[in-house]
Length: 362
Image 1: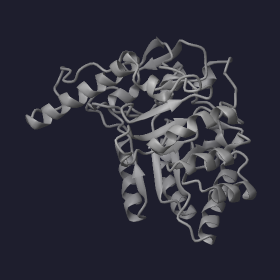
Image 2: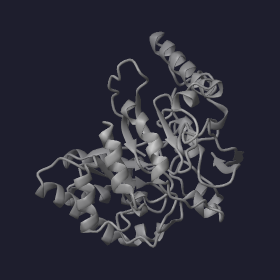
Image 3: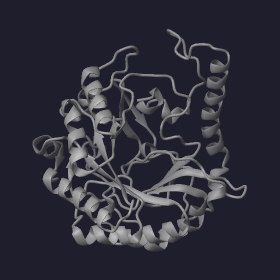
Image 4: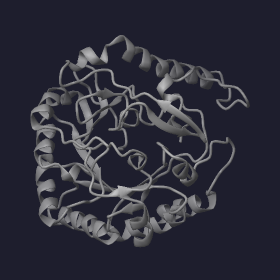
């Protein structure tokens, strides 16, 4: 979903690392590991230009804008113009894609628009594996699109867009992670981001996750170490999530500095709390089933953002994480081990986050 970057000064105004803006919920392929597989009433919509313009005035407060959510950004007819409008306000702009429709002409238009980063989503290091997980996706076409974009960048003697690979790890493809490093090297990609299957919506997906909910276990350690060693040799940055629980004060989505805006303008702390399906959302958390209401603190198309950000319920949500940060600092300053057997050492997270694997550092 994007790597957080350092904040820049905004003349005393609130600054944010990243805003994730969902521009479409339409997809051209099916992923067997997507929450959509559990729901037939998926909400399909494109964000209108008129609505996107309502967000633009706030983007001078933001370091990074990710134009992507639960759909394929390349399917939006106004994506190029969205990029141009957002970049005029100063932030870096990019998205993660399955590569749908990214031909040479479209790639050139993206580069001309000034897109800063693009992540290509892979679910295997072999065509057979990727294509079986991402139905209607073509592994070889995706790699060709990625390579062409990198060639185009070199031809124009530009450092942008930065290209990285985003790899969803599941039991059916984790053995191919070391091979993925070879693919990155051959394509000229300098960064690979491994991600967990965080939002689990059915028993099949729960069986496919590669992380464990038991502390102290180190699943797939040999495979991960092989990939890390290969990445070091090839000078490729490899970002790896934890595969076993660890104590974190704030999850990697970091709702203190980031937020998510849905295709219809709802402002939520993160993408996992507002999928385009009816509420409540079914979650499988460490093997147990829960129903979680979707979370929105207001609509940016109808309310000023500062009004939304300063609502009492939104402040209380963030204060939970602030309290956890404070306690974590106290623990470190007191030289007390953060991991204490059988004891919770941090204050509770906000209620909607307690059944999310990210709160366990996964």
